[in-house]
Image 1 (cartoon, rainbow, N blue to C red):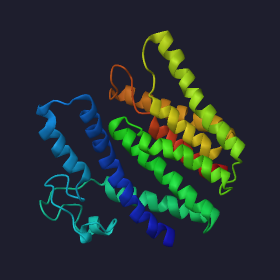
Image 2 (image 1 turned 45 degrees about the vertical axis):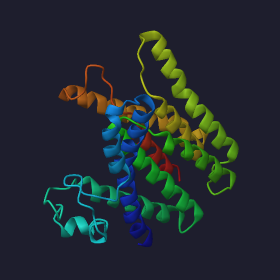
Image 3 (image 1 turned 90 degrees about the horizontal axis):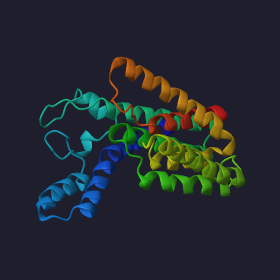
Image 4 (image 1 turned 180 degrees about the horizontal axis):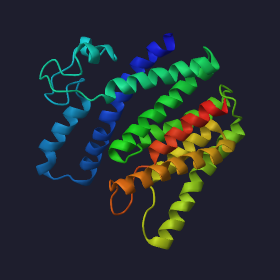
Length: 262
């Protein structure tokens, strides 16, 4: 019960990360690539949005503590902003509930332990990455790279059951697998089949779950991704290039293998 309660508030953090991190990264890229004075006002506006206190996405009204209680605030306000009465996305309470369920499942499987805490961090990070990639086709280094190191550290400290040697091999081979596919595909077609963020996410999955988990991870991600792509193609909802984000399927595979392997 306590883990689920904590998960609700962690879900709020995930929601904030999903919404703000891509905006913050875009701001940094704009500042690096384009230094023209004409962009100054736009950058200031984006910076304010990326760093501002929590606010309504419609009217920008600053949210108070009573507006930030996970799920309960959404229910009491009937899913609308108190200031402008515009409907709020149902995603917010769903992510909070899902994060709570993940943390409760971690405690249910591993008990009240460091392993459960580590698994909760890992699974909630995967949830954040899946949503960010779904929205913006980005898998930020700010999450994927620390996740690789965290997996290696957790293994080195023997918090997880994955030996350090298998964790290190999983990180290296996880990265190299899709890296090789990327370059073979590019050399044959002249197109980029996936992004470098997918390599880093797979490396993180390998670091956390071990080299032995790579085969089921890749199979689950590939099959679910292919099924999604086929459905989208039949619906006519996929672009001419047939591109869609692969990160959500890698993240789903990571969560399934995390609990299935236990």
